[in-house]
Length: 277
Image (cartoon, rainbow, N blue to C red; front, side, top):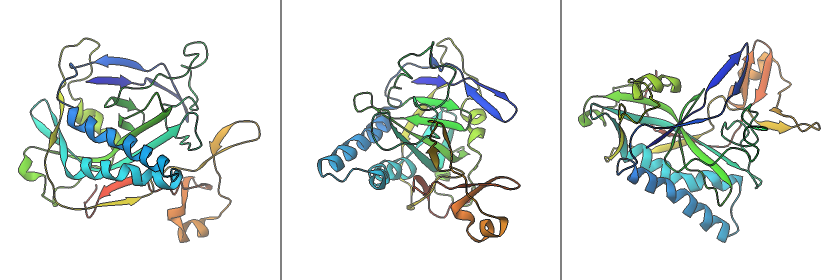
């Protein structure tokens, strides 16, 4: 399994990314094969849509839906053969480097501002191998990018829970942690070493769970626009607090009087009826 870590440096409210580091923490084996097989289905669905001339922003979710249902309802992560990471909600991130569908909030794209580009990476970011774990400031993504088709794709583990036994997988009373960055401490509690010391072993296990999956917009993801000066920025919403309270699902409030339009693409996939804390 390959782990890619983006080193972050923050100054005030700003952040920038340094060169992603690739670490091998355990030999690629059968641990992730079945999950990789599920993720490959996205490109198959995408190609089928393109063959029918139906590919576009409105069909991206349709292509990922079979993958999301399989991930959320048919499996879990086993960490070091000690405990289970059960996923409650995941969010799709998809960006075409040479196509029309953009996702400017996505970190690992050539459009994302980074100190790694320019003199360090003249040709842009390399494409992650499918099934890579991408650690960044918002949490952990599992990637399924495609270098030939020139697109970036991954899903963020938005909510999850830690379980001791598979018999707890269908227990609706155990809540899910909605803070995606907590997963660093739970999944990689042994840390990440630059040496291949096998200190962290993450396996994907198949297991049939009950329930259904519902779609909705991703959490706190704003629409983006490109200004006349080629600058990529969030799309502001000229509203007041009263309008925000009436239609809070359509806007994002950042500061006391700063609002942005919510990206309404239904790219979050969640198990119906779960409890998050």
